[in-house]
Length: 57
Image (cartoon, rainbow, N blue to C red; front, side, top):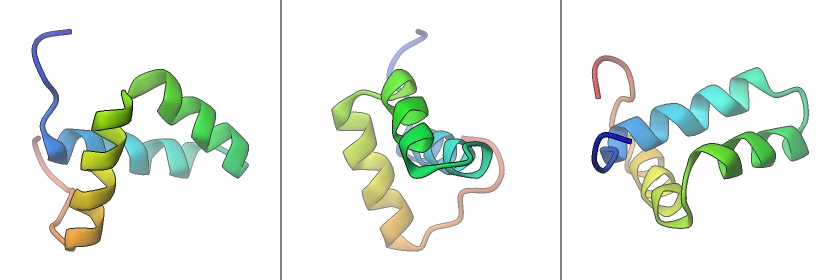
């Protein structure tokens, strides 16, 4: 990859996986294949902060 993903980009990936996957297990699989554990934690914190995830990351 080209460096570290931003917190916003991690959140965008997690939300996209949740929208695309039909089940919770599929969402976990997609996120697990795309994000590291650290990136998952950062995505969760970003989403919980209430900041917008639209636009460029």
